[in-house]
Length: 200
Image (cartoon, rainbow, N blue to C red; front, side, top):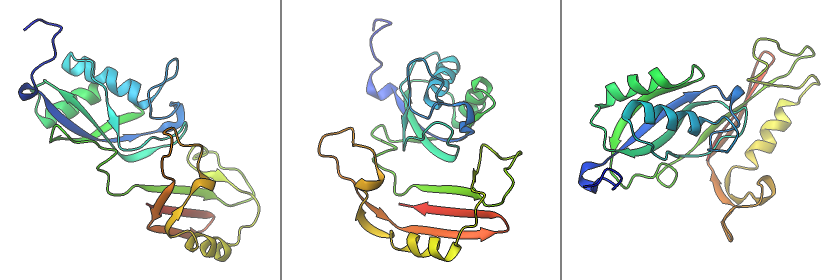
């Protein structure tokens, strides 16, 4: 087999990764030209760890500045590195603001986006007169008083299977559905912090 020919399917494996990253210095998760992204640094780390340039698929995309504590990604490889060794090898090449928590062998057909069961998001509001200094990249500062009861009532009205077109940008694929099943939208408060926890 010539060096530039793809490896036979039997020699390939698919690996799922559980990622954690600080999105402050990333232009989002998806690969972009002329911008630093999670996918870009991960694909570079895979190439350095395995010698192969592989495309990585994500369970979902995150925008610039968004952090993740359990993003799932997957790639195919002919590398024989076991799961634990692969985690150590990738983390040795990843920058300090991104890390692989786990690696698992999965079926070759595994697609993290299409096989995701649910996605969870947390939005954090710092609701006090003075802006935050230590966690300014992790909270949204709202100095004015917020009515928690009204927020909870509004959130509960969004739970269920609904068309969320009004909350979304135009779908990339023609005719793509904007109907989603919002299973949970909890609004809680502790001191000056308000958490909005969403599962869909």
